[in-house]
Length: 114
Image (cartoon, rainbow, N blue to C red; front, top):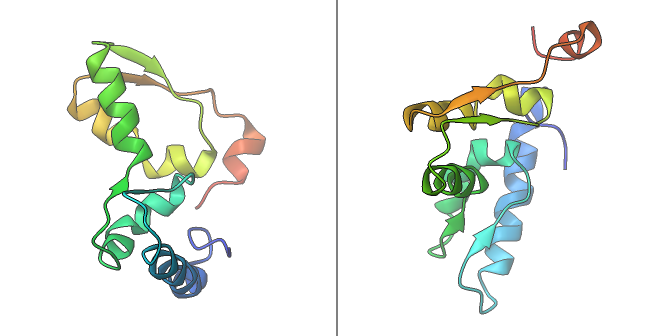
């Protein structure tokens, strides 16, 4: 799948591919969908519109588990893009959970979006 986050031109191609896969998978007897890609959660609403079968959000699952455990501070190991988009931090902060991030190395900083 093309990188649609760093290269916005690829978003329509990636979305088209994923919509096709969701349509195909909707034809088989599954109860739920799950995506093993944090960044794909950015287009989850568009994919959910493709099917009546619900998606399990990894982000929601993590936030729910942290909330159930009554954790107040967690460390987040994630790719630079996942950290930059704040996919986890926003929801965790709303649940009053402090998120500790890895230190930013100069190499890591140079690979993130400007």
